[in-house]
Amino acid sequence: MSLYQCERCGGRENTALTDYHWNKMKGEPLLCSECETGTWHGRFEKLILPKGMFITNHKGNLAHKETGDTELKKYQIKTGSPALSPAQEEG
Image 1 (spheres, rainbow, N blue to C red):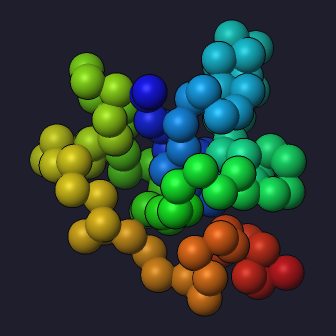
Image 2: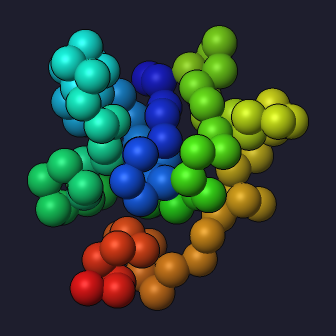
Image 3: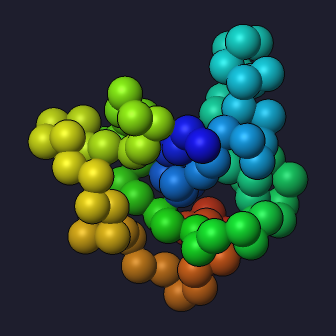
């Protein structure tokens, strides 16, 4: 299971639960299930992180770009609902 960061909302996502590989091959945005389909898959808690600050490390986990830190909860951006992206809360 490899994780990546959604390019639209900053959410943590699993490559097996989205069109990640297809989108990467086509050069399209790498989106989470919610940004891609309008519905969060619910397989795990949606964790929103500061956009562009995380990469997939050699173990397939998300890591902070500058520090390599994989303890993601301390970077979490709190939203009104764990299932909503910041864009959906505004709209």
